[in-house]
Amino acid sequence: MAVLRPALANGRTLSDEERKYFLVRRAKTILTHSVLIIFGITFMLPFVWMVSSSLKPNVDIFELPVRLIPKTYRLENYVDATNAIPFWQYLWNSTYYTVFATIGSVLSNTFIAYGFSRVRWRGRNVLFIIVIATMMLPFQVRMIPLYVLFAKLGWLNSFLPLIVPNFFGNAFYIFLMRQFMMTLPRELDDAARIDGASEWGIFWRIAVPLSKPAILTVAIFEIIHTWHDFVGPLVYLRHPTKYTLSIGLRLYFTQYGAEWGLLMAAAAMFTIPMVIFFFFAQRSFIEGITLTGLKG
Amino acid sequence: MFKLKRNPASQPNSWRTDNLPAWGLFFVMPWIIGFLAFTVYPFFASLYFSFTNFNIINFSPRWVGLDNYVELFTYDPLFWISIGNSIKYAALLLVFATVFDIFIAYLLSLNVKFLSIYRTVFFFPVLVPVVAASLTWIWILNPRFGLINGLLDLIGVKGPNWLASPDTAMLSLIFIAVWGSGRQVIVYLSGFNDIPRSLYEAADIDGASGLQKFRRITLPLLTPQIFFNVVTLIIFSLQSFSEVYIMTGGGPANSTLLYAVNLYNRAFHDFAMGYASALAWIMFLLILGLTLIIFKFLSGKVIYER
Image (cartoon, rainbow over all chains, first blue to last red; front, side):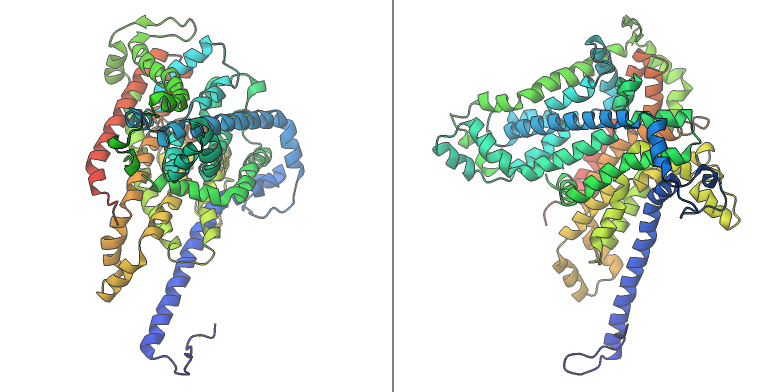
């Protein structure tokens, strides 16, 4: 870098004091990047180690000194992992659960949030406070009675206990979408009303199209949540044909704990859909998190 | 955080006759049904179960009065162990995650180049499914061939048996949780970016030091984000289950037996559903109490107006 003594436009060289200022600023930038890079590498190491192990033949897995870059590559780990466990079955189950849970969340929460934000009615704010209060209730309090309820309905070992409640709203998503819908200009509703639109028409033609960012955020959160979900399937799905990737992978680990090459290959295949998804929806992701943390 | 927005158009005098509760109730009806079926019913049912001896096999709750609560407070050593562990876990995680996430978000807010790459890196652990992440960490922390002890081996240090030793298991879990706290970095970053630059410029003119600027400008204006993150982190970390259940199962020697892990074991391994319901209610009251205390002491300190 040749700008240690930069000349200004008028040809004057910098005074020592000005030079010192620029040097300090540059030093700060370098320091900031160094700290971020060191922590950044540390943060990515687990993923690097996952991928690296997934490519190693078993003899190289248990080898010292450790290598981040495999000595020999064994791509067959990925094929073997899909055979060692019913991988495609688990993948299908995870996908099924994710798709229907997300559909339920998007439909119900958009609908409910509209009633809590765009329609004016007595008792609305009281009810909304109750919605917020339910967030304080730990899952564990509801876990046992719900298990009993779904057992009596004969829903155990099916995806119904995991999917059906999603069609009835979720406090966190209602809160998020309501906050968003409150910011939409009310004049649009009034104009539509003058044109003779019904409340349903306003919801469907105006609120839903304008709320796309919030709907997208809810969809993203729900996709991540269900894809990751471990407790739900652990409680309700006891039959191997119903296992999701979460449950199946853990089961394989408890049975064949030392097969790290295959386990890491399966873990990588479990993770990659989320990574691809993130790169497509990155902006909505970040905006969604900001939205939840700030508004209100 | 949960303050209701007052929309000028929704003042009482603007209630419209054509907008009686019918339409509002129509839209929130799914929530009301779900609330009754999946929240109100379980809420009271679990309270009732907590006074019974309830076996999952025959579904017949037998009233035992306060027995479960008496046993829990006086006989059951695991209850106190798990409460202690959960408080330790939540408290340490709160301190480490808050300090670290604010630090990283601060660095990211300095107009650094490649911001979106860094941001992705720190957010990345959130994308890894909890089972995939937990299995990877078990392998990373493998006492002999894992990445960490393997690297320590290179410099001739014999690393500890991270997850299998009572001295290090809890700390390992806490650091793994900090690794996964990227959501908070994003929230803090948005808070930093919302602070008007002009305040810093004014402080510069007055000759304020970096530390003064941080204490007098940055920290006060970051309180909404801190408040939000602290509340959610406490509520969620006291309910932490999956990572710990997968990685240590509560061991070794119950050193990482968190409250939720103990509760799950009671309910679904021992099938002591009544007892587990009593545990759940104590947990609920604990979280409720803590949340109220936090709201009382912290919400007054939050600065919303800018």
